Every structure is written in structure tokens, then in C-alpha cells.
Image (cartoon, rainbow, N blue to C red; front, side, top):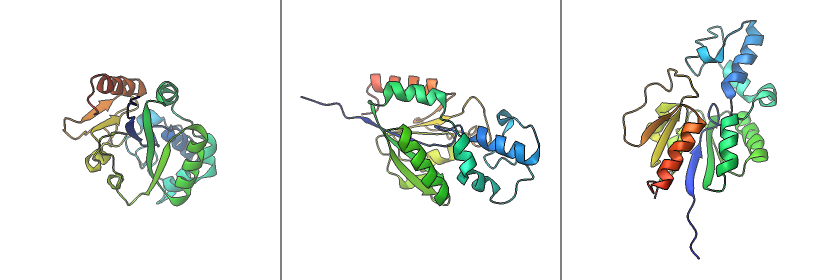
Length: 195
């Protein structure tokens, strides 16, 4: 009997699996008594919406109990995962503070059958060997460090400073949402382009 080897899928977490920016913007709106819209966000420091944020404030929010009590999984990812979880060997690859990474791993392990790799902010995601796999992230600068066979930049239906300048390469594609990611993966799988 011959078993098909699962494709390795490496997924960023914040704004790829989690709807993180919605929660951060909501917390900062309450904190600064503003009414900013996440769709107007231009940078992942959130200073385009909240120039008054202090050094380390966003990191503190990402590590907070309040963040993890409010963050939701992207419903498009959840739907894709339910249909495809058996087809892929999934690893979450995410950056954060020590506290953020502990909380993320705990949260994700309760919902998904996947490996977890937590990386400090100052270390490149390129340390993770993604050879032969697919890498999905919302920040295009991380694509250059990865050795994945296929790299997909997820825009989440909005273009920002960190996802609009996609490096020019045959193996880097842009997806609007998880529905498009699913279509890309299906095309590559069905045409044996990931083997």
C-alpha cells in the first residue's frame, strides 16, 4: 500500500490564522478613546492609526490576557482547515515575546492539530527549514528569508505597507483571502507542482 506524503504547510499566526489586528485596534480605540477602523491601518506598528502609542505598547497588548480573551480565528481559515486538515502537515511559525508565544501555543493547541514554532522578534523566520513546503504570511518581507517551495502573501482584503511590495519571484504569489489560498493550494496539488 502506498501513502501520499502530506505537503508541509507553514503558517504565520497573527493576521493569517488569528484576526489579531482587529483586537489590537479595538484595545487601542478604548485606550485612546478613538474610533479607528482596522481597514485604515497601514503599518504593523499601528502608528498609522495611533501615533500616540508608546514604545513596547503594542507588544504588551499582543502578550496580554485581554488580547487572548478577545482574539478570534479567521473564519475563512477555520473553514479551510476543517476541509483540508488531513491533507497537510501544518506548522504554525510565529514571532512574539516569550509570554505571547506561550499564550499563542496554548490557544492554538486547543483548536488545531499542528506543530508550533515560536520565534523571538529579533530572529528571522528563515531559521525554520521550509524546504519543499508552502509558507503563508501577511508580511511580504519574511518571504525572502524562507526556503519554501511556494510562498503566499495573504493581504486579508487590504493592502498595507507590509504586504504591498511583494518581491518579484516565480514562487511568490499574493492571495486576497483564505478562499484564494485554498484555490492556489488545490491548483498546485492537483498539478503535482509541490512534489
